[in-house]
Image (tube, rainbow, N blue to C red; front, side, top):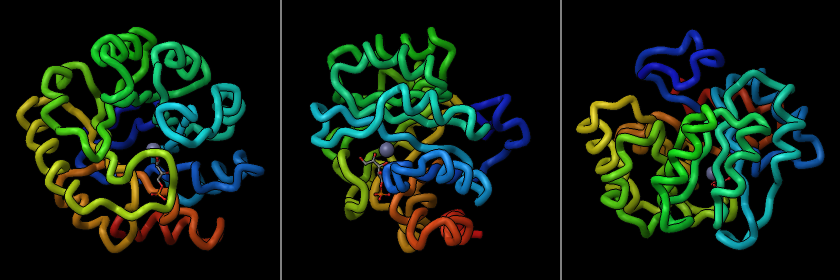
Length: 232
Ligand code: DX5
Ligand code: ZN
């Protein structure tokens, strides 16, 4: 698949697995150097989890931190908004330097409007579904999205266990993407590790979010951890 980000992924074409480390497992006192280390260790995208203490119980960071981190790397910023309401936040993260903005299907009644807003700001648009949400809920936004994010844990925290029955959903979403004939990425987020990643990519995922599995062992291990996830 052609890379989403023509400038930032100029050389990336063809079917490949992209590894998107989740900053949630980084050392929050050193976010700049953590991103630099991920960049030097072969990460493809930086996955940034935004939690509002309302849609999910946890709270993470706001647009000011994303803006401060933007000059640190040229890697695409993949911003996962776990927030409701969400439309008020979209322009702020777009301005802060997000390349791709993902909203939750469950965040409100006007998903189509949220996706149009992201597009109108010149950003790639993603939609995420929680473990209890059916793939069928995405049927009428297939023409509006650049990425579908299947949550394989309940959003809110890193370090949870992969929910096995989501493999069937990944397969279903993959079929929907093929049928759409559009270049939509299929991203999987939550509980991914070196043992289950092959099963996840075989089911159709092409973007792998990994928090715990990327950061284990500290910066000296990031390269090996990313290589193992990529199946290299
Ligand atoms: C969970 C977040 C994930 C999380 C993944 O709500 O969306 O991105 O950080 O962490 P691991 O890989 O540890 O499950
Ligand atoms: Zn996430």
